[in-house]
Image (cartoon, rainbow, N blue to C red; front, top):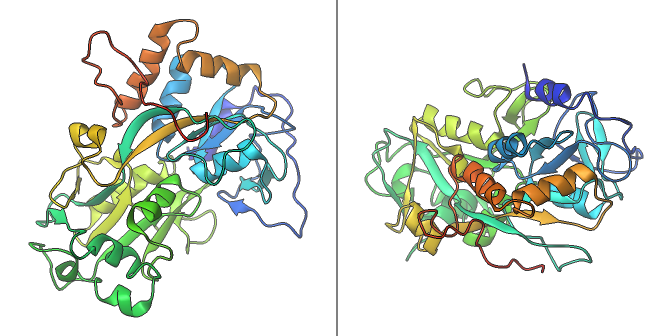
Length: 364
């Protein structure tokens, strides 16, 4: 069964499936192509968007919370933020456009903080740490990506930052990218998340990329086909190594594991038995290095809030996640994050344990 099919089945009990329409003159961020609506009406009604990196962790957390009527859609932090703020154009998912000038959820798991200035009702809740990792096949003999004195990570993905053909060409082989590779004369096969992704936002911020090199392939979420290349026909996917139920993050790990020439960036949840993470400037994305920030591409993860009409299910989930009624619930939430490869901000071995102890984000 494909990803959309599973989501539809989990949302059949949600009432009022009519979604807000988008006029023919509007554009929207397209993430799926099906006829089934999961988010509806004004306010929240079942499905909510947010970080694809957090897809597996949040799906596990929703199940562990016992809160009914919630379906996590993922698709990207940018889409979660759009639906928190009611930004136009909205988010098109399954052939229906949501949140086009209307706030249709008040919680959004995000792999970055809010963009721009804080708006009324925005609340940044840091929940864990993650890293933007550089993934390749486990049999690739190269081990490290350098950023100093020459930034080969930036060079490979965006050249001088502008994505110009000349600057990208200077780093387009494994030999130009790093030393000790299995295949120094081979071209890099580069993959990335789309522009709705908080991981892409974080990668741009951390590397100084503005425009990506033309050869970087973009993996998007399709409600029917699952992860596919942006150049694939909607509803179909040429990524045969990925299943329709995979998140894009999981798929990127599988792509990396499939070919020794592949280099992809994704969060730690892209872990795959056949893939490995490169060190950056000799520093690995270990638990200690990410927690301390020693790994250059470390970042926080968030369960952010907005000021739309909050449904009881949303409030119940927030209360569970932050241990409002029982401190053990916050531990269970943090455990769901840890079990999916993310890193607690304070070591769980500390006594007493202090779950979700990540400090304040930009929007109080």
